[in-house]
Length: 354
Image (cartoon, rainbow, N blue to C red):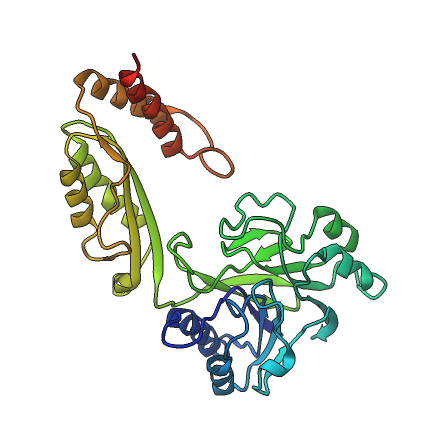
């Protein structure tokens, strides 16, 4: 048996909502029959808030009546109950529940305010088959995830490494973190459509084969694809040409087919020091002209003017030196651009010192 998994859809009903979120869920459901999948799990935060109307979701589920849908509440829709949704193929697990799926135990652990996921697991410890069961929950994994959700500081229904070591699940499928994340056996499918411009790139859903409990990612054909490109600018005659060369490289890294370029909404930011702010803005606007700019125009609020020739030489030497450093940029360490900006701040602020 194959089971599809998504989470954190954050549906907002009505014409003032975000139709791209429902469209992403529609894309998932429409593709499941072709993948041989008859079940979908939604691991929390199906809805962005409560109370609200559920008609749009009910109608979508009824259009895909051959798909069995299991939903657990998350911290955004913690009060979601089985009676709120009327589609016959939908079950809402409002309490922890252990079920069988093709010879695999699946423990549904809905979000419970103030609870820990390990506490829920312990309630079923005598029934769980170590190394064979699958956990579906909504909360924070405390096993070293370095990119928490900046929109929701704090810890929600945490799962620890000790919990995993003690109970030995074959697979853990969690909602709450919108960034697609894999730290086996823990997997966050991520939000199926970016909720804001910080949630970038093509999104995914997972398909789990119950035979070996292996998750396989599948790209979602969402109506909106966010990207955020940030450029550190230095003053100098060649800076515009450097940006013209850098922009196509950034776009190539998106790995998008040309026919979906119209779905892109990109935030473009420039920070640092330059001789002509308008010129920098125009170069950035031209470079991304085939895409929708999320803010209407490139953001240059933090781009300052400084054409001191001595500092120009020093700033460019700094960039060259930082580019040569053999360092594991990112992944919990400072990004290369962050280091460069900090260094530039020291250089240019020194000019203002008495």
